[in-house]
Length: 146
Image (cartoon, rainbow, N blue to C red):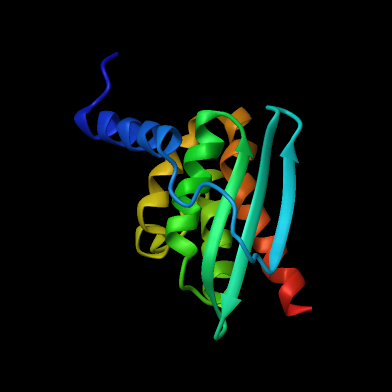
């Protein structure tokens, strides 16, 4: 079965994000940091975030992992930058619903390019890979709000 043009475009976008991740590295003065691991796949993600004026002003991730985890982290950092914790919480919930096949309303609008990871629903073993970065940002922001 051949992939459709749209499937090919999505696949290429994921591969591009994994090979050339956005916001990859370390922040010089990160105010919040967290490391999460996915023991199923071996993914390790360090996430660093700085907030100013109630919004994410800087974000970076590092670590190692599969194509899906690296692409998802790259897309997540693109989408949450300059967002408030409340906006990010909605994004995390929407992303989780999307990759578990729940068909959330307005997912494309809420998640931007990260909505292309919806295809992960076809590969249940990769859901943890795709959600790792999203869980990390959620946990960091939850700590900040406490």
